[in-house]
Image (tube, rainbow, N blue to C red; front, side):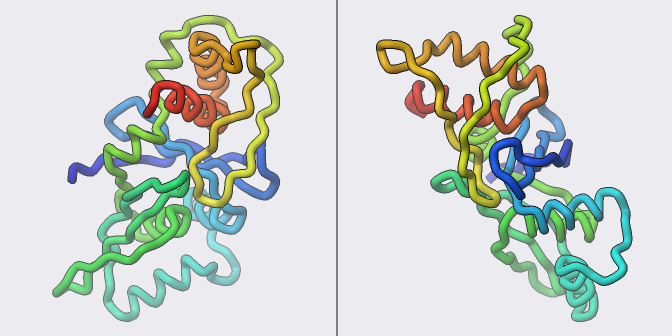
Length: 209
């Protein structure tokens, strides 16, 4: 299975769920973005490592690193391996020098640990195809976005893929696909990846994906 390397592009407060954060991962050699909703603790742990801040007392992920190093276990890579019913799954690939083994983990924990070991983050094509946002799709819209965007309703859980938004309907019961595409372009232009992910999911649903 071909792996696709990702890099962390941003971390911001979730606009739809209090206490949650949107972690934006980007395809290292491509134009797709992968937004993942994570909890406050994991977001703090990731941010501290990105900013190279040393906490006064070790966080849980720091403890994991200290323990792994003490027993001579190295982390090789982190893989966001699956997406089931809107929830991301990941694996931490480890080695004790003689054997290589994998540990299941939430993506937020896996990435927080991976950052501490300075190892690459990967995903697979099936995950990016289903949950990724293609920037070129936004650019092709090329139209000026409306100044006022609608507030999205969402109850995503930690490390879940953002769900489809509640979108106003026309008499036929659906907003035209063309209008959804325009909304997607506007969200991407404003770098509102969380809202863009919701609209993307709605478009995929319409297209039978």
